Length: 596
Image: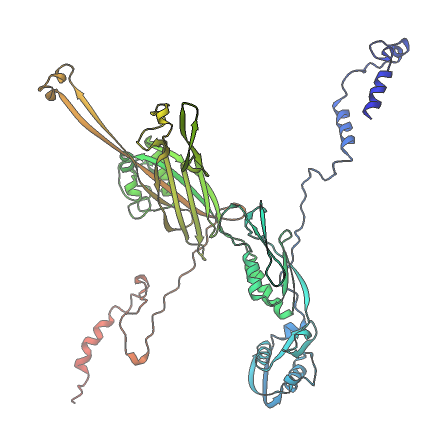
């Protein structure tokens, strides 16, 4: 094809080009020849060219109805009749006769083989308004008879004849997805074939997976493990379509549907916000900002200098906010208290924000966030010698896999949400690494060591300052926890002297002043946990109502007891019985004694 194009180009005569037009071409030439096409024409041409390749729905936003249906199967008429209350009074009658008498009175269609041996067993029943389903469960459990409930019939079969069970296949589409391991396929699969002396060969394959989210998730989802353990039928799960295909009996499907209803629910998640701040000792002990308040919707009035106290106890009156005041009662802060404390830190000018990571976690699943510079170093070395005719040299060569150290901050956290949503149990592991440098075994840094032959055998290892802690804490949604300690201590000695006089031997000490400066800096770590919904909104659950605590009732044989184990709240005590204690004082004088 390319050769044909080249031949066509060579056959074109230069006289037929636009550089040498004829009179006829000039007469018929259009005035728009050579000009670029209009925009609408260009767009139309591009659309025509792209029509075979781009569908009409490309770039459009449409809304579809989800492919969902209720996990509970439709129940037939017989299933509803099992909820009826029946009254049965029989004496030593066969099960077959009992069942058909019940069916005749309640309109239930029982189908059974009269020659079935378990139906010939006899029972004596004296029941008053008993649930029919509970009665059939008792008969099935104690006589070896099984009942299969259909839409219009109830089959009575022998419990030992499993082949007679009527099975069906159902499809369940889940509303929520699965939590599967965050991993790709194995990079390498090692196969080992073992050939025993007797029997066929056995091939064992070993695959290594690398998880990019290492949260210790099991290989199978929890719902799959529950179905394998409790569901007696057969099933398969399609993870791509969130579909469960199961085969079993109606009674087995009842259990499967309960499992799906409990597991196919939204998973709670927590937003973790951390702030790593360094601050001087002076700012840590004495911080403040101006606090204003208004009364009865009046004008805002500056209340500076009026009072001291905690943020929650003297709202609108606190004017001098210190970290001692904020953490007077506990290390737990509300969102308002934390905002006030951080505002005071920023206004002081002596604080430094190292990092402010944010991370969203699933309930009871760990998470990690790192922010810093990664440094690598080797822990194993080999000596490499080069021997020439008259000279030999040696140097250290690193071997093995390098280790790494991150200069910055990192936070490992696991959040466990309480069932009532009122508490969040967190396991925290914050780490701060700073001042990473490489030092030789004799204490010299890389910059201090001369690059000579004598220093080729020097081994440099990293040296850094680290601050870390591991703890567990319980907070409410939106509350914060403060952790911290001494980050570093800067110590300097300053000498001030009078010129000339301070250098006089002996008398110079009278004209000199020596001062030692000690400036510790504190590392403060604020961690806030907030429950969030799937749409990103913050969640606050209503606190369940607490009713009056019932006192512990002791047995009558023990006599009258003293105070109960759960005494009522003081505010719940009535005020009316106050004058009653005066009655026992007059009782001995008015009643006759036992001797009379």
